[in-house]
Image (tube, rainbow, N blue to C red; front, side, top):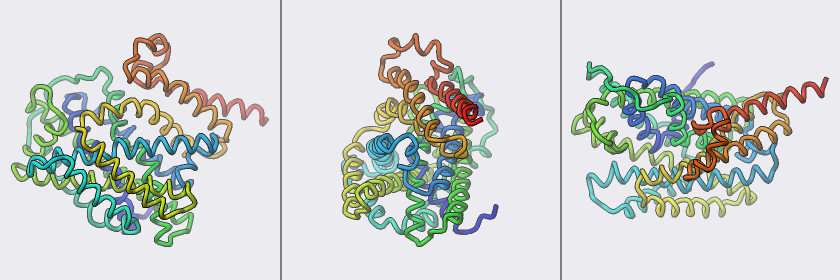
Amino acid sequence: MKFNKETFVAGFALFSMFFGAGNLMLPPLLGLKAGDAWLMVTIGFIISAVIIPLLGIIAHARLQGTMLDFAKKVSPGFSLIYCLLVYIISITLPSPRTASVTHEMAIQPFFGTSSWLTSSVYFALVLLFVVNRSKILGLLGKFLSPIIFIVVLSIICIGVFSTDAPIIGPSTFQTPVISGLLEGYQTFDAIGAVVVGGVIIISLRLKGEDNFEKNRNLIIKSGIVAGLGLFIIYAGMIYNGALFSGDFEGDVGRTELLSGLSLKTLGNIGKIFLSILVGLACFTTAVGIVTGTADFMKGVFGDSQKVYLITAIIGCVLGVTMGQFDVHYIINVAVPALMLIYPITIILILLNVLPDSFTPPLVFKAVVSITILFSIPDLLASIGLKNFVIPILDILPFGHYSLAWLVPSLITLVLMNFVLAVKTR
């Protein structure tokens, strides 16, 4: 498998659209709480924040259509509803969160300006990039992403090699792997895979690349490059959080911990580097989300460029509005939405990666239906109704780990294929 310049440009562009606010802020605190169990936590986090998103990109490479194709085997109506939910969640939660993080970590400490001003300027620039979307791959892949990667890698390497102190303190997690996996939900990377994967495909078409096999190879290779970058950053930041766990006492916030790590590794100039990093990482993710949403709505309304522009403007206005809330609040609000949409997204990615012989429409319908049904207890528990669903969670495997849907969905997949195989014979 050969990797050329085009592969790395597309790969870094994909990496930058994945790597946003949550990707930067979540791993250090996860490592801090994990302590000596940091490796187990990392494994769980990598599953939901790297492996599943990479499978999502591979699924896009196989389909090379729009996000509607991900669920079309269930039904056209379900596919449309699913896509609308994903895009609504994307432009109302992770996209505004990027502006909120940028304000808290990169603007307010230096300038003391209001969040309204930060969000307004921020999303005005996002809109500028989205309108000029034909240049997105080049700008992100050649310039912004390498800067992001180098700065984060500097923090990680200096942190690892500048201290001989052993990792102290036991893990606060009873099930480190599960805790890491669920925290990976908050990166929105699986949802990001189905959103920004379409951006890559459309960007390639705008450049005149319409060879299916060539695009498939390029998308898969770029996904591997992006996945490798995410793996290095996540593992390194989790390890750094665990490594410096003895230097932070009390209830440390995500932004406070990230600022503290940059100060300890890069010194006073670390704040400036971190500000640049946060701004770039968040900005590229917002561009990817708004572009993906605008692309989708454009396709729904007959390839209308006017709809593309209107959707981009609405996405940016929502970003300015929701960006006024602090990061912690946005993360908490996201939990119920993730408990419902994430399992469906993971299952759709898995089904689209498997060979077609194992995933006829009937299998799609059955597995997705079971996933939705068994995600409801997790959804109810996340909105404060856990006592109501405890009897159900008690009898389901992983029921008390917010994974009540997992085993029933996999059993349904195997059982449906067995039944269809018997009928065929």
